[in-house]
Length: 106
Image 1 (cartoon, rainbow, N blue to C red):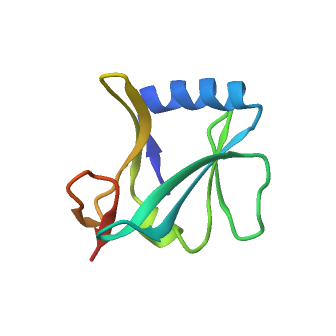
Image 2 (cartoon, one colour):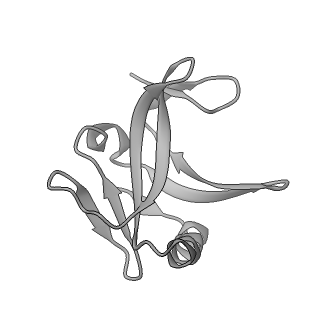
């Protein structure tokens, strides 16, 4: 479903451990100036329609509605000045807004 960079794996282990949650939930929400925004949350609840990716010390959860859009993406960890965050590199995106917060799919 998705791949993770080595840096994303290291940060996912750190972040899930410090949050007290075992899973990272990735999804999409309708928002922003071009259509969708990615969501990243820490979670302990696996829902019936979730795709579950087991990465050993943590799991990635993606809800059924988001799966077709996220499939084939790579999760990376970005450090930009004082900002650090997860970012999906998604070949299905056709455009992003100017600030990069929202994306559009073809």
